[in-house]
Image (cartoon, rainbow, N blue to C red):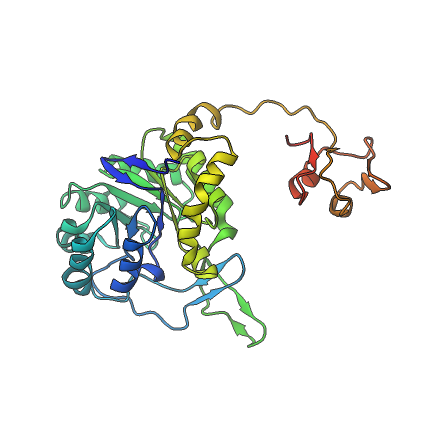
Length: 357
């Protein structure tokens, strides 16, 4: 199974890599991703001065990471003089260097980072003004591809994309973590971590897919890296189909462990085959012919049941119209049924069809 991606003259063995964060901080972590099965390596966001981060700074649930992290806690000199030269010497895959945040910082940082980068990823999480000036200051100091990372709180995200492209950016990374927000710790009668936290992980996947889909629809030819909520092989395929060329994951690995990267790469061939594709490249090609077409009108059918139904009764319990009941089989009251599709989407046996499919 061909998992490879060709993009901007670079070859990626597969589309998955880490996103900038605590798992990509420092030499040991960078070496881990250089040696594992991911198709790309990514640094934590480097600024001139190391960030001062209040601890603790990360908490997790089964589907969400809360954090009050900032950029790398290491001074840029450590990255430029120690970490990146070592990774460059040992490099087995393309390297994306994440950097931020101020225009004056980039005039110093980019020339120093440029020898090690295949792609620059520029975080704009704390930037509200002068996007064009930031991109221009970076472009003046490198010929490498520049990907601007979109924060989900940017309302006019298509305007953001147009602004950075006009200023010299190459592509987009979408999206960064969601926030700011607040989480409550009832047991300790306090806020969790800090008064302002950022949220990432599977919980934000629909927002990330929305941004990727609409950016791809508006800008059909630019390179896009999708990030936000990936946790399994099928998520990778969804992002590729929605418009991404490469994908990044971090929070799910914080929740389940970093072995998840290798597992997803291992699971990709079976997932690709399951959905009738032959390669990652094929998904990138066929999405233009399928996903952006206007959906045909559904036939407004009530649910039907196949032989996989084991009478678990979930559909009966969750039907918002009370249209389903149990006997020897599931009985559908077609007068009550509102054809919403909830039962079909929630059936654990894939035993219901006809409403959504």
